[in-house]
Image 1 (cartoon, rainbow, N blue to C red):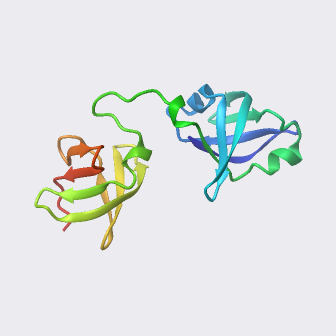
Image 2 (cartoon, rainbow, N blue to C red):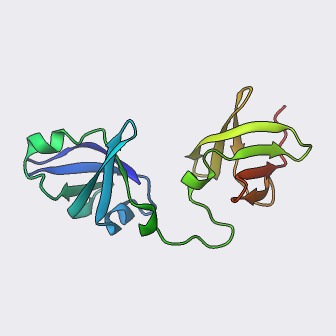
Length: 159
């Protein structure tokens, strides 16, 4: 959902780089998970707001700059059951990560390592024999997505 990137003031507030759209949507979830290197711990959002182009937040129990400094660099996640269900043809990026990407001719290109937002369209970073950037454009590049089998079929020319 985001990452804590800095401090804001002296009363324990932090700056948040939000992956959500709009940016302040990360504040819609009171129960946060804060973590790094796969180690997560529960945290509760006390307050937050959009501040210019940034988002600032205060975590329950973090009431001074020193405690807040310990959070800088931590990733922000929310429990899966807190997320709304997706509609047909919509996917959470985290659900696409790890999916096998197969070209229409049957060639396996690799697995989705992560997703990028470029402004024009989302892009899959696919790791296989080499790393490939494949646009996630439904019905043009992405032919089908089978979430049960974790397979994404594509019609994309890489040469």
